[in-house]
Image (tube, rainbow, N blue to C red; front, side, top):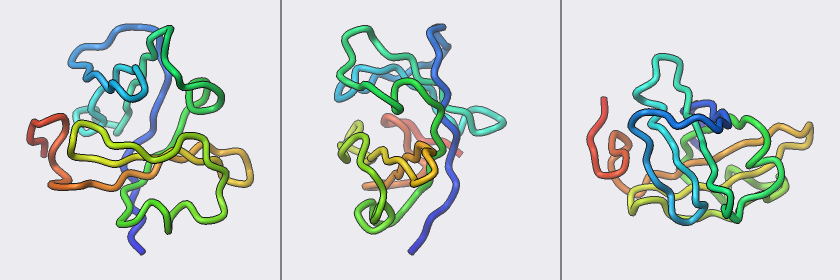
Length: 118
């Protein structure tokens, strides 16, 4: 089973340039592929349905072939959902408390909200 580091997600209240809107979670995100240290900034709208560790803590993200397989034995924080038609993501908590995002690309891994990235 493939599990490859993708990025670290950090919470902010500051608007960042080139944010993308994720309707399912009502959050603005930046593309971690555009950041030299693979940082994704997340800025939640006040009415976001996301609560708890996903909204309050940093997360580490991995690209996986199968979210269900990768998350076995972990606490579900946010059930898998589709983002922009190109990605499926789910958030989990490892037994030591670490917040983990698993990303399963539905198409090209170099796509981000309809744009090609390198």
